[in-house]
Image (cartoon, one colour):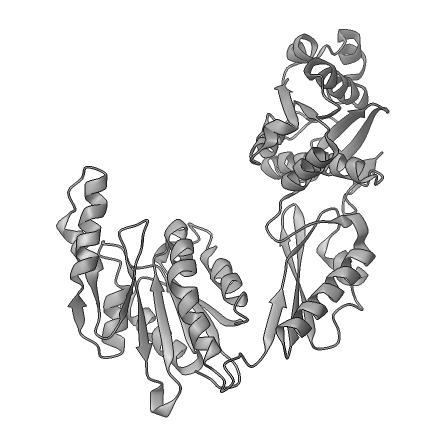
Length: 443
């Protein structure tokens, strides 16, 4: 183990990753979990299920990293060769771990199935490796410690399955305790060389370049860094603080987060893994208020997001998906003359939809969506992308007009985000604020 710093690397394996068939979320998860132990990941790599490519990646990792987290290639099929190639690369024979084999058989028996012969390959490991139990799958992992090349420091290879559900649990139960022990032993006094603290701040309504401008003088002292990441429809900030002690790093992180919140105000809606629908739910519950929804162009997506939060029944009374004009009249009581005069996509109808949902469900607040998500259906007067978000409270109703120049899925997602943000801002006593990056909006 390096005496001054621990260098970590994440290596994911699989043809499907390189072909773009799946999003490689394992890298970000593993790196974030390592950071909880004050270990920063310095390298990310992905390779195909090709023995030559894998061998090259293993050798490079040994040369430059102390901890190597390997994800993927532990299954029973012909393209799952991670363990075999790792053993061959570092001159180790394979051995059969009988307890792992029995655990796999028992796993299949619980589901009334007989284990196929091919699954036995998952119980073979490189000589000298520690087996890492997999409590929710058939593929155990392993830890192989490899001496450095030409007298270099030892590298620890942790091999984990690529299935996120299995990897997440094994990372917490099997890997992190072992990494923590290694890190604590990296200095004579039993403490790591430096402490690192990080968090994720979620913002909505401001573009990435504008964020950089607004925060141009933040995190410039060398001990605190600031990263930017877009995850539509949000933009994320990643402050990372370093210190000689955990207390020093914590204090620096708290200070930079306070500075960011002071500059951005309500644009920052959450921290960590907290979603906007969770924030809205917490605020509604805290204030003892209830919410109803009325949707047209979003087709139930807004209600789905709200009810994805556990405990939503405490504040969400229900919603109506009224895609046709007839359903708007029958279910929400929208006056037919209003539809005839202004059309379904109009501020007048958006307000009437919200008012109808509030009255029919007996809610304190209601939010509505009506628009043209495309790709067709637009006119010169009402183009594709036009959308209205209606909102009603005891104080009255309002509608906000936007034009979202995005494809249908992103148009619908952004519309629900704007709707949720309107509720959040009302609950916080903040004025309505349309996203700054829109080409057209009127409030």
